[in-house]
Length: 329
Length: 259
Image (cartoon, rainbow over all chains, first blue to last red):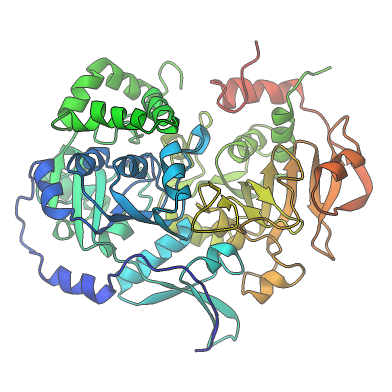
C-alpha cells in the first residue's frame, strides 16, 4: 500500500493487540469474588508508567474515588487516554501523575470554561501530547478489540489533527481514494464506575454507555467501582443490561457516590459548587493553592468514605434532587 | 421594541437555520441552546443527537455537558459514542453544529491551540472532542463564533482542528472526506455567512440589525465574498426570549438573567 502522507505524532501506547490477547489468557474464567478495598486494587493494578483509560465522559459517570486514590498513592508517569477527559484527568494532573495524554478533549470543562491546571502543564511542554478525536479514539479501541494493528478511518483527513497524529494516509487498494490509518489502542488498565456490579465483576450501566464497553474489551486490566454490589441473580435476571462481563474484570469495589463531583445518570447530578471551587483553586497563579486543595480533599484523608463524610449527607442528597429536576436545575 | 442581547440574537438566528424534520449533532453551549430553541419553535421534529450517546432526548433544560443526564432525559435511545459517530457516518445527520476559537475563509476551525509550536502551545484549548468527526462526517456543518474580530476570523488558523473546505474547492474530496459535505453557515455576533458555491469562501448573507457590510469587512481578517443582496436578520421575538430564559436556560448559564 502506497503511503501518501505520514503524521508526525507519536503513538503513546506501546501495547499491541497481541500483548492484550496474551494477557487475557492469563486471567481466570472462574467466578471468583473480586471485591477488595480500593486502596488494594489501585496498589495492585495501577502501576507507574502505565497507559490508563477512564470510563464515562470526563465529568459524567467518572470513577472519581479511584482517581483520588491514584493521586493519594502518588502514582507516577501515567499516560492517559483523553477520550474526553475533564475533572478526572484534571485531578490526576494536579497530583502530577501524568506525563502523556492522547487527546480527543482535555483542558475544557465544557460550559464552565478552561482548566488552569491542565493549561499550565500542557503549555509548559512537560506533558507529551498527541491529538486525535473522540470518534477516532473509539475507532482505535475497536481495532484493539478486533486484534488488528491499525484501522482505516475517514475523519481527521486534511487537518492539523491528522498532521500531529501518528496516522498515515494511504491509497485505498480497492477504490484508489485516500484513507487515514490509525494505530489500534489497547490500554494497560481501565478504571470505570458502574451503577451496579456483582462480586465477580459483571457490570451494568444505566443510560448511555459512552465508551466503557469498548474500553473494557480493549484494556488488559479493569478496576470497577460501582454504586452498589448486587446479588448475581440481579444480573442474571437482566443479562441484556450487562456491559462488561466478569472475566474481563480484576477488582470490584462498592463505592456509593463514587463519581462525585461528577454526574451519575439516574442517581445524582453535578456538584457544581465543588467543581467551581476546584477550578478556581486550579486557576490561581500560585500553584500552592491547588496543592492545598489536594491536601484538604485527598492527601489528608485516608479514603473516599472520609471525603464523603466531609461533604455531608445533606449536600449529597441535594445532588439527587438536582438529578431528578426537583427544586431547580 | 424587543430588548435583547447579542448572544440571544445569535442563538435565535442559529436556531432559524435548522429545518424541521432534519437531524443535528450539537456541541456544548450556544449550539445546544440553538437546537433546543429550534425544537421549541419552528422545528418540533428536529432530531437532536449528542456525541456521548443521547439520541432524541426531551431536553428539560440546557445540559452543562454534551454527555450529562439531560442529554438522555426521556431519550429514544441511550447509546455509545462510537454508535453516534457511526450514525453520522451513515448519513443520518444533516447538521453538525459547532463552535471554535479561530476560523478561516474556508470555514476551517481551530479549537486546539494558539501558537506556532504544537508541543509548547501559547494557549492550549480542548482539542477536537467530537468536532472533527462531526465536521468530517455530517452533511452540513454550521458554526457559531462570537467576538467576531480579525483575531478570530483569520487568513490562516494556527491549527486546523476541524475541516472546513481545507484548501478550497475539491480539497475535502481530494483528502478522501465524504462528497457533498462541508460548512454551510457561520453565525457571528455581527452577521450570518454562507459559503460561495464556486470558491467555497465565506460569503456575507445577512447582517444583524444596525451592523453595516463595512463593519463586517473590518472585523474579518480575510477577504469575504458578499451576496448580491445582503438582508438583515430579524430580531428575536418576545416568545423566543421567553423560551430562552424560562425553558432553556433558567439558571443563566449562557444567557445572563435579566435584572
